[in-house]
Length: 397
Ligand code: C5P
Image 1 (cartoon, protein in one colour):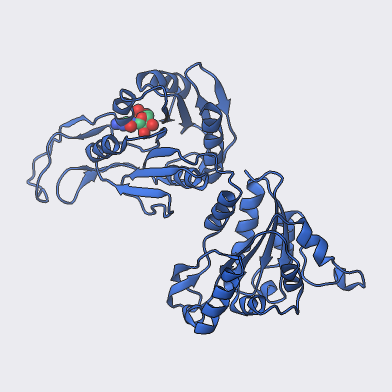
Image 2 (cartoon, helix red, strand yellow):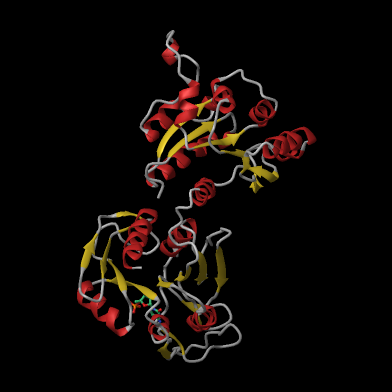
């Protein structure tokens, strides 16, 4: 959390300026106070109305208020800020900052700033690689400003390479770490996520519709709050990329079980968000099975219950959180699972609730503890649900 912290975000002319809206949203979520400065060029990529609405304050862009004679006091704004973040920082702004130019409002704030300054360059790969840009970045870093390194990926020019602005989550993480408000630092979290696929033959499997989005959102949030995350996931479309998340890809429940056992070292929290297949074929065909005009009987046997097996290893120092996706009588079933699997909390989502379904972005949850305490939440998107779950885990940790 960044409650009480004053963030000054400066947005300059780059296509990545549209991501400033997400940066503002994330800071608001962290309860920070946020003010936005926009250069004239940035307004071609994102509107002042968007950023003033999200930050709940008019944006600053010129020296004068609404073209009147009354001026914005850049020195007072510099003194107000606990941190100045320039994101995206264009090649033009970097060059001006490195050379002390002062021909717009942002630069006058920058030159009178007392707090730490972070800048997140965004530009095409050739511009970033140019010796002049490199020199400007080096100058800024040598003067004590903090570089938020650009990332490699697809660029607006259609080229692929280094130059993309760091993702909004990464920028906010860096600021969270700087303010040392990382609640889960020195904590290790194991998360199971996604479906499992149980092999029938070389091209077929038994699986389910789990998208792994809930586990993904939880992994990101724990990492953003300073935890080291071991993310053990069945086959999904997107795996989280974050310096504090180790992704272990598995296919079947047996592989997930094996990975959990191997990784259960110094774990503080284990979150079992995977939709593990309850059954697997008792044996599978090595090659693609051909039809032969007779029915094919596949005998299914039970998979290991990972949460239950790991529950047997749990000590008093560890907290286990499970999920229950139920189609009927969810409460009774969730409560019995908490006991059976030696969990500390269980997150129930009922498929009876409108808007809740496998693979969807929305979720409506109820959390139970072993003492039958029940906390219900509204229908929300999975990122917001992750915030609710992690907040409850924090209060039990
Ligand atoms: O499938 P079930 O409703 O029993 O799942 C409840 C919890 O147990 C979930 O957290 C799920 O990830 C976990 N589970 C597991 N291994 C299984 C089945 C479920 O870890 N084989």
